[in-house]
Image 1 (cartoon, helix red, strand yellow):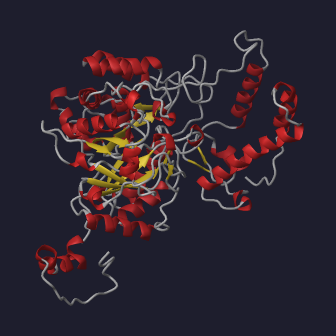
Image 2 (image 1 turned 30 degrees about the horizontal axis):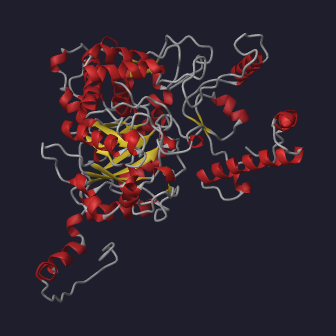
Length: 594
């Protein structure tokens, strides 16, 4: 916002005061230089995440989105910053600042001789609030292991009832009932069956490497049994998984991801897919490429990724062959040529402006787009990568839906949302905001045994989920049935809510934002100025303009010159017979012979 220099005088004074207690033979100058070096590294990391090369370009760049700040407050103090959600102003900021000051200097017995427990990264009693509490994890695991619907309802209630904790934007939404909208509830047996709803679900892009083979294959088997999709993530997949198992199960992931590092991407990998996903960014850490620490790269992982054991793998933040929407269209075209039967997906991060990018993706003839929110986890990255980055998926999804509908593009591209989805209520809100499909990552891992130790990046997961340690992997106890139970519990919750709302078909929910309203029961001094009008806006378009995916993209793959060349060269390819051919070529013939 314009400052060219910052003087962290309180940090300097604190370090000087601590100098005698550090226990090392450090001078004042050395301590301050170490602090400045650490701050510089953090600054450089943030600049690199944003694609900014020079400090001068960073000054005044205003690379922030605001969530929950009043427009008049932004206009005066953060002029030019985007905010889709109205909220607090200067008075509330002052009140919260004073409250923090009083807490720091109060006589509270808990903090008299101790610092605040924090709890920013891991759950702590009296610490930062988390949706995944120990009780929520326990309820979900008991539910899926014992097929106990009541336990799932207890889990869903803990997650959905956020009137007090206010942890997510959607927790502040009210879903209207049938009576509010002049409709009648419908019997549950008239609602679309759970076996169809689960086909809209997918597991998130968790790579083989970030999680163990046991966890990765269990997810794939479970999703294939349901007719849903699992995602390889960006680490490739072992070729032995492409063949069905003797009992009819399949460990093959339906979605094959192509990320900026291209780890594990081969023609064999691409042709064994139902969908190929181009990962432009990740909701949990936008602006950074994937990162797998060296201690998780064992010999098998290295072979699959075509790399060296023990050497850390970092994907670059951008794709180095994509610097415009035309470049993205070229990659979509190339991947479609490799596997014409596979849908092409593009994964984007939720932020202000993502709707314009999604429209470009649709015009580039992608079949599918994923909007990824910041709530999602990441099992292979440093903790510093996942804080203060990204936006709630509610913001990006709403803008994507509005832009695609307004430009008459919505019908030809499927929209998926992911990043912190946990319950059927999340699915309903996502559908009302415009999603056709839904990605789950942390929740199915918890169903399979994850206990949220937050040790994924250290390779020390004690339950064998996010580790390559052969001893720890033996502790994995998850089964496909656990994951299937979870998804069917979610689908049944969706069906129950649809019945109360008066909907029989899931497609009829999609994009119907008039069913959403601000939660009136919220009694919190910071919530009074909230306004979700921009998120709930529904474009005024003719009735024949689709609000959900109901058509196919036209890729013109059959007209590609390579198809004619391959057919003409068939005798040479199959029998070794010399072939001579002659064709005309024009600049409209793309990537011929590639």
